[in-house]
Image (cartoon, rainbow, N blue to C red; front, side, top):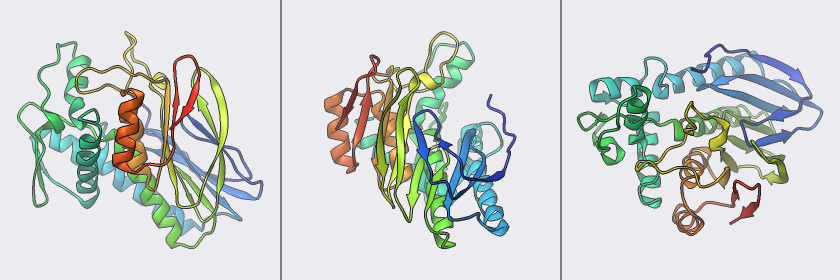
Length: 294
């Protein structure tokens, strides 16, 4: 289990590293906030100076709110939904479920929050039972219900939602050029240079993340459990086809979900899904370290 302790510091200058796939070269005259969000290292670069304490307090409160919705390691809306089979959902959870349904359809069911029931079986050493698509989620107003015996995870969206919420909060404060990295990455106000990296192949190239755009990267090899099982698994037990997938879109939440699903898909299926989802560039790294851009 990933530790939940937060460490919040602001430093001048700095090279900011993204979670498995992107390192962000920031200009020297920049302030940096560091912490954790949903178990991932969280960093925010602000060109031109530090954020006021009240902004950081708002940011910490926002991260706490997102964790209270999506965390699988503490009491949250998702854990209550899995435990009780129903929950009265917040706007954040409803937004995530709406996006999950969209990406589920666009990927032919490969993106499926219902895979949590597979993980629960694997963790308990049991043979996985039948998985109902999307966990059999039914929405009635603000109420969400699961099919009996099902469970969901929205980890393939939650960090992206946190990134988008933080970007909106900071943009509203008028702080100028900002790079938000809460597991996924979004640029505000200006462009930022990023290095695309793979856990095995290392740095493979540089790209520019334009203002208003987001990028998310999934690398199955970044977290592998005993027995060789990657943390990314498909609803039919699909195994990763790519060492790293990076997706650029207008929102970090969509980029997060798409990169998670695309890891499990072949190139033609990825191209078709990317068109349906209207993504930007999709960068694929195979297990030999070869980079392809769609």
